[in-house]
Image 1 (cartoon, rainbow over the protein chains, first blue to last red):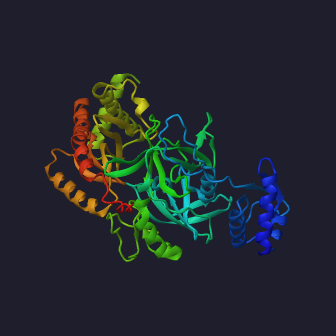
Image 2: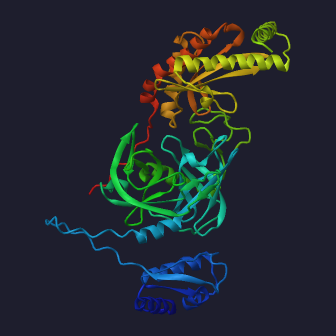
Image 3: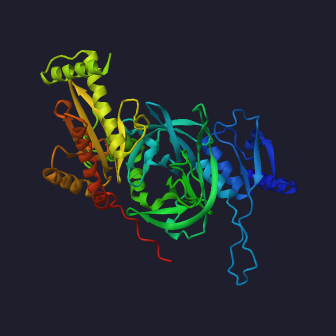
Length: 336
Length: 179
């Protein structure tokens, strides 16, 4: 067994002997124990994978904490809930589904997206869907005073900030795709199957709800996780099938992921009926699959070429055209 | 200044505008206030709003609701000529080319048959019905009311049908996985 594997196994055994199953350890000690001398992005991913394979989770990233001598939390990953067995006795309660592992994974892949407007910054959520840095968010999150923005600011779970280039948007379905300037690997969410969702299935949302106090100061509650269940996996409204749920979403959640118990993303949280508890809506992720494939094929450098129509979000690679091929709007003079 | 003096000053200002003369800042203010007052009267008497200032933004735009239609009315100025501009919001421009193209065609065809000064237009990413009329043509509050009412009733008459036809998406979800 490799040195790193032995260390990970010993660490798991130590945590199992602790009553709460978690501890804090100097990051330098963990790096060294797992055979790494530097805290690169590759090392971070490898360490997390090795520990996860032994049932241990660790919270750190390339630049957090700032010092290798700082301590980081390590904890046993709770065992997966036993598979539910059908039973005929209504008196026997079904065991609750544990969403904590799914939440932890979703948090790592969720980002905050900001655009500059005349009245100040507007922000919402997004999530990484490709480890190289492709982000999904809501179209209305990336709209500035001129329409759909071409460049946005992104803050990741690691607190690292970067810019991103919008490569596609669709106002009716309210989604947008953004390539991060910062190359990966980034923690990313796997795609789930929204068509397999069933009513009452547990789901969770991650976002950054914001609140304004009496003096109009805005406070952002970053990386808030809310849980609930699917109310209707195919709620049809105006020709679009939405995932209707009772998972709380608020301003600041828009663009964030809707995740199932396996930790796979099944939808993009976008809007809600204000006065209905079970009236929160997420766009099923399969509406975006073709656009995601095209964006991956185009790549980061391809996304920076061409002109994004600020009216309809279409990326026109035919730069000689003075109007948008999709909606006919004239391209802005800046050419972006 | 008493009311009759103000009315005289307004009448002189309107005459100057009609004759294409340069307007002083006071004359501009009188004309604008008279126009905005007429819009407020419409809000009070036709829409039933008790306090029009609650529906007015910092640019003087008055926001209206009429049946299912929402719109805006304001006084605009260009080169010493004042206009009453009224806009009714029909629907957002669709996102799919397969809907945009036939929608634009239908809007242009409908423009042919809309009576009066109302016409379909695109404002930003919204389809709207607009009408713009010079204040010199609008003699009294009744003319203002007819102008604004015309835009809003037209909007209310067409928005539901257009939204039903074009307010969706041509995107389809992929077929579900076989179990």
